[in-house]
Length: 166
Image 1 (spheres, rainbow, N blue to C red):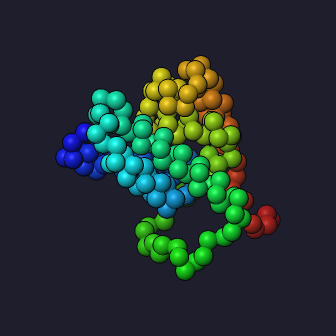
Image 2: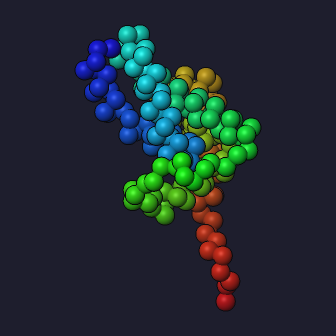
Image 3: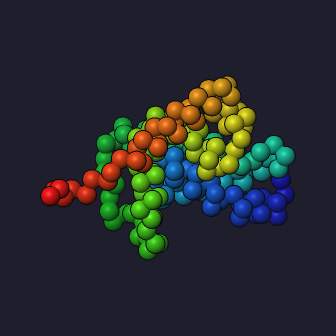
């Protein structure tokens, strides 16, 4: 992949991949970091990447694996991040619907959450989801069906505002 091709690929895919990974892991800043690192690795391997061989899937998988590795390190260390080192953001906050969706997704099993995000947010067909996740198409369909049902039930629950009913 040539530099101009890679630049166009980055401009097109970066925002979409951040949204997808954020839906998977529930943290936009972490998703941005992981996707950026995945693109750095893709840049280093751009000679091997071919636009016809799904470079976006390669970057998405790399970003997801980076997120999992970071999560494992965080769990092992059990250390809270230092506030002074955190990035200050002034971006508009997510909508209530987005927060509810991400919270509901976090309650689903990881396999269901991953196929739902890849199929519905990444707009991948079942065949490509199966290839990327490494399972049979029937398994993806089962995860999608169960995940949709569980998500619908979770999103139908009333939101607890912490107040008392009269």
